[in-house]
Amino acid sequence: MKDVSTVKNSYQDLVKAHSPKNNVVKNSWRAFWVGGTICAIGQGINNMYVYYGLNDVQTSSATTVTLIFIAAVLTALNIYDVIGNYAGAGSAIPITGFANSMVSAAMEYKKEGYVYGMGAKLFTIAGPVIVFGVITSVIVGIIYYII
Image 1 (tube, rainbow, N blue to C red):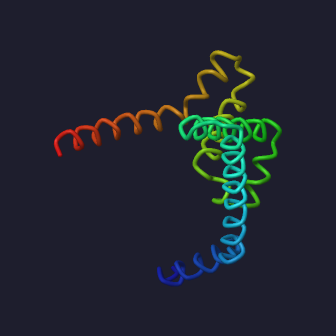
Image 2: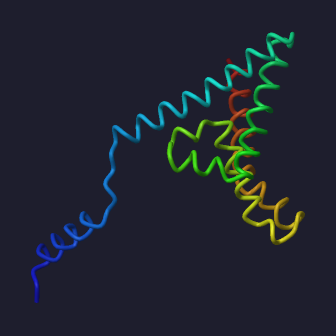
């Protein structure tokens, strides 16, 4: 019978040999420039809406809706997945990453129909986020009221 430490060391060697090599500097650079590019595009859209005369509230809402729409279309065309595979966390910018996760979950169940498939699965990701947002806003509101 083999010693436990020998088996553990051989297992660790096997895991190390078959694990993908992670280049942190390259991955960080990709996430940085892709995420920065997405944010720069969002800022450009924001500036465009300001140029056309929208006020601050309208500008932020229109920019958010535009970024969600662009991310949804890119997800439907399987382009956002390519960007995500390349950039990793850089493509998970809150608005576009959330839109991507919602649309891809809905597209996965499209064959089950529009109501029970796409409609129901669309909120698989959105449901917990909405609940967390509502609960957090209630707690912050209570704290704000007390203070």
